[in-house]
Amino acid sequence: MAATVFKLHFEADLSGPRSGALTSRLGLTLNRIDDWDRLVGFRLVGASGAIRLFLSPKSQTSDRDNEFDLSGTATDVQDQRALAALYNECVSAIESMGGRIDFHGAIDPSNLGIDGETGRPGIEGV
Amino acid sequence: MTGFANEIDSAVVLAPPAIADDAGIRLSVHHLNFVALDSQGIADWRARRAPLGMRPAMYREFCSTFFAAAHKDGLGPHDIDVRLKGSASVIYSGRHKRLPTELNEWRTEFGKTRLGRPAPTVAEELDIVDSFQRLYFHQPLPFRRPFDTMVCLKIDREKSDYDIQVSSDLIERRCMDSTIRHAFDDWSIHDPKYDFIYDLIASSVINEIYLWSHRWTVALGRSVNVKVFGATGPRNRTAQIGDLSSHFRAQDWMIRIPNPQED
Image (cartoon, rainbow over all chains, first blue to last red; front, side, top):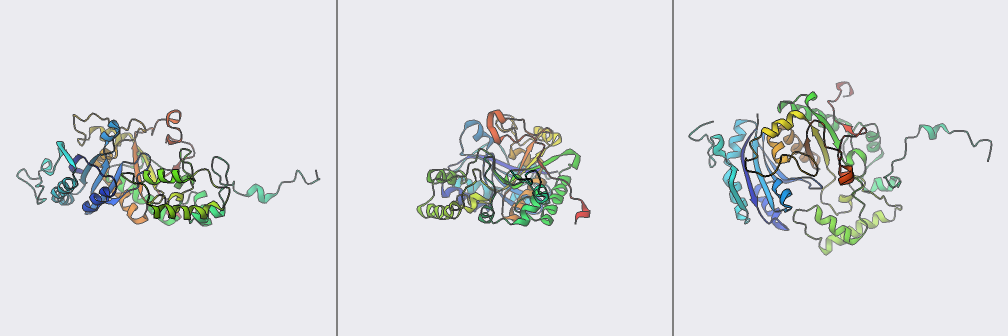
């Protein structure tokens, strides 16, 4: 069963070249956005994991297009750990672009008992 | 009137119906050439051996790998209804998308396909004008956009995508139970306008199907977008959103496990 290792909701101005700078830094493949598409880009991690950047459902309700969600989900434990090891890099990439992360309600690797820096099992283990 | 007026030409009877947009503008060889489609592609599309942009062998692999991914997500073929929507299955885009023929329309459409909506540069506008002229001399122009037209016009930087509509009661129930949506989040799991379950939630529940779409996006060089709905699919919202309503239709292109005898 898949597990979401992290989910970060953030606000950012990704107009013009700024979106390219963020997706490039995160190593995302850009997805086509049209009509109702919400997936901005993705990055495959191992055989069963991916980092995904979405236009946030919140941007739909507030009619703004500057709210995003970045998630990391994997099926295999090994790929969940690989995703956990990328968590800090993702936080850093968002913040370096002036993005404001709402950590209230965020999911981070510690929820699965994984250390967000090394990707290894934390104190609670997995 | 001659004595032959009531005779019917067998060739005419057996000929497949002309392909035309809803304004009655027929798809011509010039239009096909403009978007780099060939007659084999159209024949495969007519027989539903493959959607536009794919050959039959590749399409069979596309389908079989989808159901393998669904199996990994714990879904059998009877748990899901899978359809291909969009211009790859019907050649033309919906009626809400007119073929843009003027500069201000090109600028608007250019921005829509790019996050942040930047306007085209002068060089990019010249490229669009140049591309459009190759189409312009093949009148009458289609009223709607044939598959891949926008990328060939250099308005869109991406080719037309494959829209995969997955409807499932089981997935919907799993999404409702998903913990990715926090208790204080004030949004529902469904988009209020189009009914789909937000990708953020759906991808956490059917990770393997989304991985399948990512791998095919890379392999095909065109986006494969999955949209998830409850078992009965999207509601009929034609009155509210016109052609954007993606409710089940009798002529929908169904995605099924390929028959091994066809290999």
